[in-house]
Amino acid sequence: RPPPPDAYNQAEGFSKQKQMLQLCRFVSLIPFLEDFHLEDTGGDDIDAEGLDIWCTSAEFIDIMAGDWEEHATLLCNFFLHLKHEAYLVFGSGIPEGDTVYVMTKERVNDDVEVFFWNASRGKRYNAKDIHCTLKEIYFVVDEHNVWGNVQSTKSIPSTKFDLGDNKCWKRLFNEKYPKHSFTQMETVQDPVDWKLSQPREAYSEEVAKRIKLAVRNRLEHWRSREGKSLVGNEGATRKLNDVMRKMEQAAHHEADFTEENLHAELETYLQPKSSTTGFNMTGFYVNRPFTDLEPILDEIYNADIHHAGPVVTDGSESDTQFAHTVYVRCFPRRILSVWICVACLSRKR
Image (cartoon, rainbow, N blue to C red):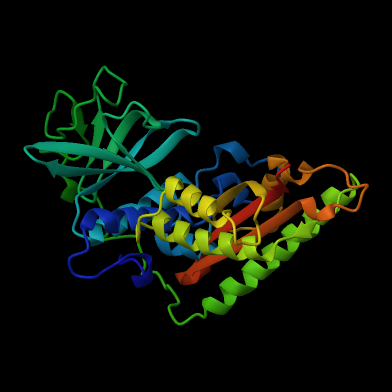
């Protein structure tokens, strides 16, 4: 099924590899929810941890939450729409255990390289990468067949990926048990309604305003409990918002903006002739899908930035200032990329 147009760049000449990276990132922004949370598990006859619910991509988007298999299936279908060879991979990963990834193959010079895509986290790994979070493969699936991995090695870098090699992979459908001898249907997938006419800009602004107010209220509350005030710095807040917009473009593979660029911009901003002259800045940012406020507020609290600065007794409250900003990008079906940045500016002594 085709992806929504705003999820990736369809311009002629834009590389397919970048399109795939954009689609992987888009899918990762759909909130993650394990199967047992989708069912009322109040009854004694339901094994919550044993539930394995498979949603179609349309159901996944309507629920707006799913786990490894829903994310991987949607991403695999997107890749197939781009006419790229893609498979679902069932195996074991870190930290989740049993999992589902997407596998693609790409020709690099005279070699074929294999890549694994963690659609839930928006990550891509080369099969030779020792840091790949997929650690074992049970079987591989495409729209035509299922291949069981019968290799003795469990190591991904040592695994052979020639699915035609019967010593390494055992096919479910073969000459003895042909696919056409089983009951078939063309697909279980229904078209996804991406609601492209649904207003998004006003919604993203509304969510950003709501999050920013909640963050400010919590920062004020946490600091007041220790006798500290919250003095804002509007200039730094505007600068951080500009930087978060650039970070979003980079995260979605639309522009280049690295951590080094971020630090360089902020160092330049802290130079003389700005509202932050004579200040040091410390802080952090978070980028995540949006489900509700509490996980965001918990993450800020655990960062402990609200403890910055001394208890004020001499009227020098402005020696410690705060900047916090929220930038929200809204994709079709109101799938959100939320950026939160909180910084403390302490006057140099």
